[in-house]
Image (cartoon, rainbow, N blue to C red):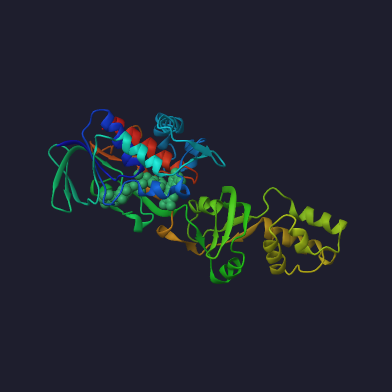
Amino acid sequence: MRDVIIIGAGAAGMMCAGIAVQRGRSVTVIDHAASPGEKIRISGGGRCNFTNRGTTPAQFLSANPHFCISALSRYSQDDFIALVDRHRITWHEKTLGQLFCDGSAQQIIDLLLSEMAGAELRLNSKVTAVEKAAEGFRLQLADGEILQSRALVVASGGKSIPKMGASDFGYRLAAQFGLGITPTQPALVPLTFEAALLKRLNALSGVAVPARVACGRTAFQEALLFTHRGLSGPVILQISSYWQDGAEIRVSLLPGHDLFALLQAARAQNGRQAAHTFLATLLPRRLAKDIADAEGCSGNLADLSDARLRSLANTVTDWRIVPAGSEGYRTAEVTSGGVDTRDLNSTTMEARDVPGLYFIGEVVDVTGWLGGYNFQWAWSSGWCAGQAV
Ligand SMILES: Cc1cc2nc3c(=O)[nH]c(=O)nc-3n(C[C@H](O)[C@H](O)[C@H](O)COP(=O)(O)OP(=O)(O)OC[C@H]3O[C@@H](n4cnc5c(N)ncnc54)[C@H](O)[C@@H]3O)c2cc1C
């Protein structure tokens, strides 16, 4: 009988294993994948955006926004940065507090493997059934072997990127033990658009602009990218986590500018200038031309009434679109929703009504913004469970 079995050798599971083994626990980590930390390996364009310097609970979505406070303060971004420094991994800050390895994401996987030295790691191993035993839990593996442990930690992640081994295993296990599941949805995912708009966006593929995108009362300001599949870039991924089917998004391609006033001033100064030529002083040329043409503003500024200028300005700064959908779990970076936090202890991640059963990382209904926050949640929740098992 082991002290702890952890299902999932991802970010959260390996973090938890390291802490538990360093506290003298006998630990087995089981994963059906052929190698550990596959999502870490491909994260951050291969450099792993391993945390965010500015992490606070405000950057997380959950039915209970207070749940993550305890774990994030018990094991913070500063604690993980100190661990990275102890392993002499050099890193750099990109924009908005996002920290990346100078070298490769493999360095983070190696850090975790070295922290969990002494734990048994079973790869290519599938758990087919779990049940409560007289003491602890009994697990049946696909090859027929039975394992037993005092504590069981579920770190099997969300449903994103099924071709990388993502499964709904954790949610099913939670339901089996009577825990609630809040609705799950692909998050941090490109949005898709109806055919006519898509055709227009297709022609702009490759154009990038700083933009502000709002859905309801939530807004982000980051880069927006036109692609052959529609709209993407960090600002679209961020808003996708807040978007629900049928909702409208509002896009400003020129945040912080009073474009109507600028167009009026340009018309007064140089009325013979074409509208798209003036717009191209503020926006990429291809985009400026597309918008001016679509608005029927292909003539000189002097020929355009205030009403036309206002309509042109609105299209640029308050473009309203209803996405047709999202690209789904196939490309989503994370899954929002998950194991209901009301059924977990926020200090230990243990199920309130099932002593010895823990849920950590993405399987829990705590979802971070883009920018290193999801890994920080994996480290923080994994650390908390590692201290408790
Ligand atoms: C392309 C991409 C890029 C990303 N980049 C970043 C980034 O730069 N920064 C950031 O903060 N976040 C990033 N994320 C999100 C981040 O990867 C996840 O939030 C994080 O990996 C979640 O950690 P986890 O340990 O909970 O789950 P995972 O890392 O998904 O680990 C779960 C593990 O459980 C295993 N598993 C699943 N089901 C079973 C089962 N039935 N039996 C046995 N094992 C099972 C899986 O094989 C996997 O190894 C990215 C995600 C993607 C897809």
